[in-house]
Length: 420
Image (cartoon, rainbow, N blue to C red; front, side):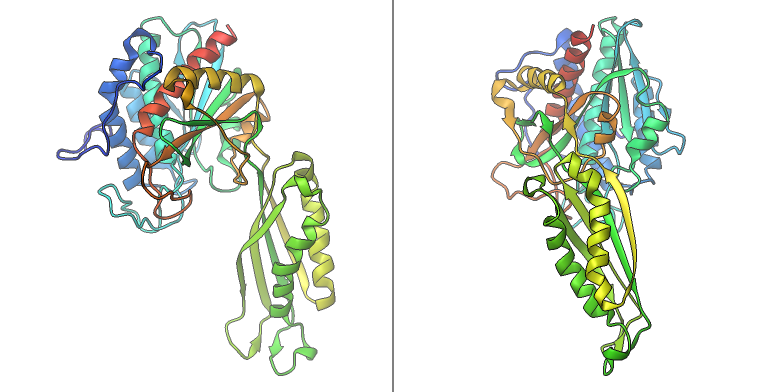
């Protein structure tokens, strides 16, 4: 494989590829023609990434591929200090502003169960959140904007951020920020796959569009003992049961109902024998909340409730509350730019309202520093079942790739014009 941007011989694209959606405006300077030529290569890239996923923090081959393709486009990418992410500036007018576009590039620890030619070849690792699509889209944007810059038609600088480790804590966005990824940036934009919207729709929302998301791990310890004599020890299985059933409900009673707080344990373990009371037990889960003020108070509330619930059992509590990410709160002016870009890229019918999600997204940390917005890119397959993100069978309608490229090119050009 000489380039990821080559569709293997005999491979067929999933759908037809119109050069531009009905009702859309043409991209400037014949970029529609260039995009049409690039689409097969971008789909090949997406499939290559899907077949060769890398876990959060380990995206070295992915980053190397990105850097190679950007270099072939005449750009000058630089790797993040760990080598698992890429930052690349597309230099237009030197006195113009800098607008950033971000894609996350990591995969999830899931086994791909799809019967497709581009099924993951890495056991237990799968692009089940669409980050392969995000990466292919931003590569396409880079190629088109590089053409504009070469012809002197780019009114400022566009910074491409290919970010590692979105799916874990600590977040990869913090690495990008520490590496100078936001230096001199005036606005930042991103998109995320949304299987609940069909291709050709873009979900937009002013204000919070995701929830805050933290990790909670509780370890319980005691002497252990015989199940015949629980009164002589600490019954950790009983304590664990109280923890996972009582704590979520009680935490909800300590916060406003409209804060949308959701504490859910996804892991619980204790013991190895039916007649032995264990000396250790553990539960781990996530706390998600829509309201920023409640998010600030959540660690103290959870710690107090856990201790209150476990105290009567006699178990010793070790609570680890790992702060994750605040809600993504979209800036109104940035959403205005995305709205205009969506209308231009897809026609006015492409604009869709979208609710605040309970999912977390570390794009929020960028918005702590500069204004910006996250859009939801429709990837749903018409006529097929909706498969949610983070499921091992997740896949997309690949027509979303050129749609995403058109959207982000229009977004970048409008953002540069708005702050010129």
